[in-house]
Length: 318
Ligand code: 2P0
Image (cartoon, rainbow, N blue to C red; front, side, top):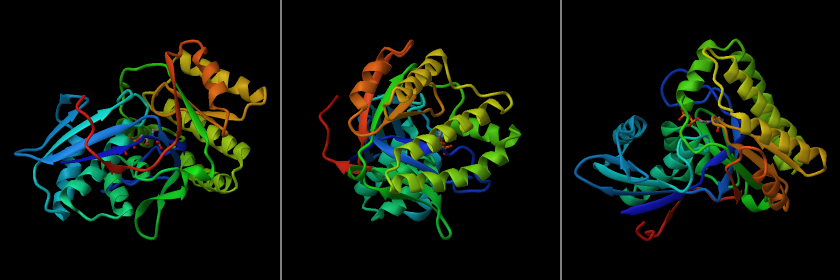
């Protein structure tokens, strides 16, 4: 058997909406940071039939079944038992599908000797869940159109600009509307969808430049804009998608007040009510202390930039 770990990633320029046709290709490029401190651990081994257990609960997972079917068109892959565990809430806006598919493809590659490059693992992970293409890589990662394919890539290594992350958890339970369903609803019903696609290409270029220049102010500006624009797109879908709760709004306010007082920090929020504060190096402790006291915050999780998905030795039994 083989075991792989992967970390979720937090998009600073968001992906929301797919191209039509096969391959699970996003409609727009995206940029993220991979975050150590939250980890998915996935173990795979050959078995008599396919099975998937997530946090000890075995169930049908259509997205995993679709990915395994597609991989079997290319590889000689036997039936496989998959056991995956997250040390953070699953399906609650913390990118568990990104780390999940990145760890799964990496474990399958290791166990069955599929001989994949990082780019190939990223390509297969994207077919499971598009944001997973970025969790194959550490540090700052992108998912953007290449010459003829959509590829993930490492834009910059984690040590080159060690930003810190503080996640304010405001709800532990899974969301009602999955990201896949939500983004399809936005694509088909929001009057703002085309403006979202057009403007995200510019945001992506701005953010790549800000990362290359370690320009925190510029990155803050474009990342908060991408986040708020994403949620405006969600709200303008029919029926409207509202992933926030009261504590989410209070935490945004806390981050804004911190920044006004001089702390280099910005917020971002995905398809869930958790608020992620991204801090310049050395500022995670102060931000965590204040966010922990923000109304409605259940707990805070601190993270650093992390490595990409990788094989590990067998973990001790739970
Ligand atoms: C992102 N999100 O760029 C954006 C921001 C959520 C909000 O990618 O349908 O789980 O499996 O490709 O990757 C969540 O969508 O969706 C997501 P599928 P995925 O991180």
